[in-house]
Image 1 (cartoon, rainbow, N blue to C red):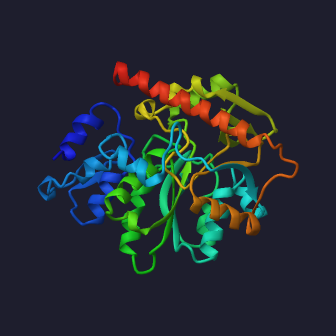
Image 2 (image 1 turned 90 degrees about the horizontal axis):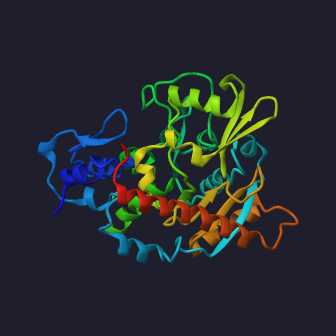
Length: 367
């Protein structure tokens, strides 16, 4: 039976830890208390004497292939990017949601809809805590769900969870400790996260272990990688894009990193030029489109102000059908070719990410 020490050797020491928080969350949820996350989000021993060497932390790690077949069976995964029933482009009907959204605000609209209908008691999301920094939290009210909308940028420096480093990534899995502590009030949640976090939560579901029993729907995010906005990275971006951060209104990621300036100009920076900002583990990740989610979301393939949605199972299809009546809309006059064209783009971006991960695996960790 492999244990957390094996995770250290096989994942952390090889630079492949995604800091998703799955191992720490499970250990805390069942009250073992052997693990914790350090200030940068990396799992470590909190009290090694409390470790019972159950091996579950090893099995639920998204980098480890031990439950790969079971995970695919659970989610109906099919080559090459998981189950795909439908692909849509949509946006929220709510002006308040659209005002806060990066793309079409579809995730926020769905969370509000699910909460209003009593399908969920809360949502595991993230909110801004400083410049590019996001912190996971359990959103229970409309106001809290709205607070989590969009890719946040502000000019105030913040310390948050990652002192001196600002990141597009938030280890939302860690928030399940709060969910378990409030189990009487929070029994049904929606989980929003990038592919690595969806992966680790689904592995918990395969094993039937907490806290996966509280999750009613998995909303996955398209992910080109986790970008770190430290001081050096921000200066480099200013030089590449010929802009000043004081003039930035909004930041978005589609085919490129989009820097929206206050005068209406948009600086487009190709993602392949941003490797200097990526976390090492992201170079080994094969999942672009959150292949194990119920619904996957991103800006790729949709027009500005709209969200691309990949419907992966019947539960996701039902949610979209109900929401299209109540809270979201599709564009009028949409080309019948959109689903095929969108799928082609998603397949291409997924192919690139898988290919890059395979090649990186052959040469080993980045220096």
